[in-house]
Image (cartoon, rainbow, N blue to C red; front, side, top):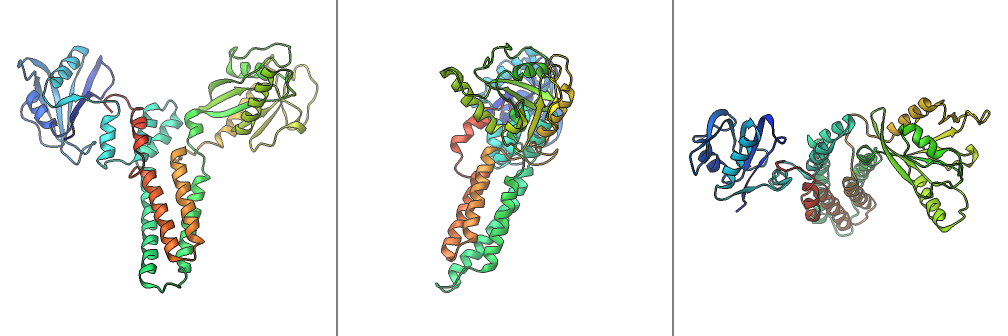
Length: 423
């Protein structure tokens, strides 16, 4: 039998009100021991909370009752809305801890029970975890779309179509002749669904929104990359000297530009290295350039790497004459061009972020949708009904892993460990 758990679910005291949650088969009995007669389900009532062992008055609290399965966890749930002083909260938690069969909840255990009892799926749980960790408005909005079931509803629609396709494939096996080819209409519908999934995979992902858009500043040595980093950051974050090759390793500076999370990265100058340490730095710089979301180039325009979001800069504009057209003249000393450069970086960075209110996939979700799309693609090219049916089964399995119905046991501890105590 599953333990009955309890925890403080609101912020740490002191506060005006604190919320203590109890979930499990023994929740109502435990609440009755403290508060006496409970209110009707989904009704609030004021009750005196008394220590079951001494009958001492602990607090006067608002008591709410939610019956299984119509609760946040799918179990019987009691909420005690107490006064928010430390002594009050500690006394109520201590009294609950002395009731047989109750124990303190682990971090994320309430949400994990909601998942295990089918109240939410894995995508909603991931959204809740992101919502707790959100630091910017854009992160909050993206997490809320997931937490409210935006992706779950879309997946349910895909699964319904996939189940219909599977039924048609199985029916062909049962009733068609062995040498009968797969119904062209079935192949067409599988290709259409595969195409829709691939369109979703082309959407901006959530990682740049969570981790920051990686803006890499690159170019030959001694072109002012580190000075530019310091000017944009507004503080000395990178070492600046007149000696070429000063930067041996990359430096990352997290910033917010126009409300957009940015990971500004200074790199070693790209040139033939003169020693082993610099060679390692140059190699790393090359990889960072390849993986950049936005590339800011401080070299000759003709030597700029090919990149879909390239921002060309003419550095040290206070010293040099006119540069090539299309480059933004910038001086880290006088501040000339800094605002134009920051605005351009923010515009390019915004293009890799999901639109406001749009559903953005994370790596795990994208991986399983890719698996489903590939399986549907194999179905669309099948000539044998049995092969088509098996490919559709693989697509269904990928969706089950996506929603957490199967094959995610190794993921759950890490996911729910991100939650705070009482969530």
